Length: 542
Image (cartoon, rainbow, N blue to C red; front, side, top):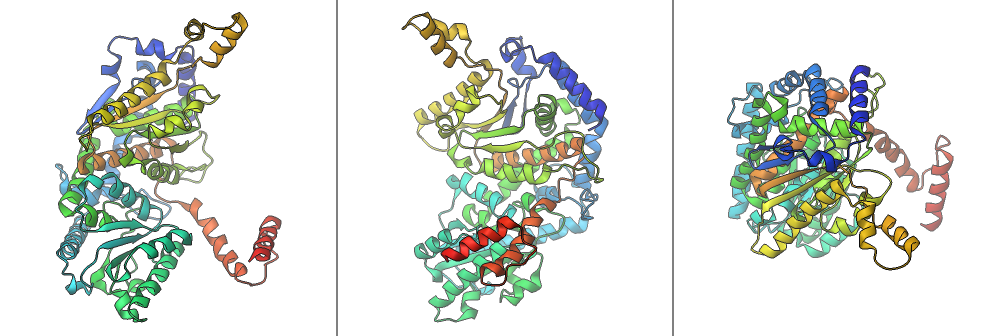
């Protein structure tokens, strides 16, 4: 952002600071002016500490930055990821379900369509229990997804969120981490002869994925008296490195592609979502794509930023970070099915926007992504809401719920929605000292005053509410795509390349140099004192 734009936000924030959200919410027509709908999603941002003037200032910044041009360039497949000289075409993965013609290159669209057909044929064969054409044995009951980061978080979120749509044909499991406890526990529970393993790695060099793959390969081989070829029949790969997959005995017909124009955290719409397709079936997987395409169409067609949900969500985030100076952002889904959403958004937003330099390498003037965190409501209310209501730091929130439940327990769902609405109101309105004092009826004046101070809620704590009509494949697809596009707009406003992630590399490189030392190799003198000391402690207990 330019210095002048930051100055504008500072002036608007200073002007709004004396106003409490109670005053803003008392304005006639507040909800109607500060809420918008797109398809199955309703966004209410009337509880954000914004007024028309501040919102107009934010919109002017988006206009100055050329948000429409950046949006259109992404859908066309321009080289937005300049550090790696790659286009950004995750939207093309669901373009077949769009109502608008896709501007993506025709060869990209054709390759995606071919892969989706191959994926559907494989899923259909496995569902029939007749995947002999792929060399996969009959009787598969369990599917283990081996992937980390975007190859785990997106598929895991979707599989858990859409549990009500599971076909029941396969039980799906996830092994992202190298920690052996879960791997060992999973091997105790599953029958190796009935287990299919999905190795999901773009490069086929990801340490965690390949290590877990080797462990499961040995486990399955043991069930076949050490026959490696029969064990290999239990593996399907999703990768850009077909040769590496073949070297592990996985033939080309069991390798589905990943592409450089799709980042891992944007890849659930691709063959990376194979585990989801196996869980919910291809018709529901296509509905999931259709929901994302609906949000793509909205993002592309709503040229007035005031009516564009991704732009509004991005502007609200910029306002809270750069205008009001809040360093954290909470995500609270009031749906147990969306329990993985905070973790998914941590990667989507923090890996994409966690930069301190701009796309040109220059130091940025403004703060960038806040710390994204959260948990499912109402559990969160009994864990950390104390700090959010009465702590010294303000944490803006996204409160997310569904109007219609996916079950018949109406009283439970009504209580859940009541809590969602009540918490948003409590964060915004608070409880004044006078109100708390009026409730304190016992003790002398000093005791009542002390109790009232502890029971005062400052309020004036902003939140947005996102309501889904119901949690379906379509609405989940739309919700995820909404946040994807929010990231694209914020990356533009902050002058960040949101599609590389150099920050994850350094630790991985260092881990490779440390691993041999833990196995007994000499400790290099270049290791720092702390690392040397910790290695000595580990060796002493090994």
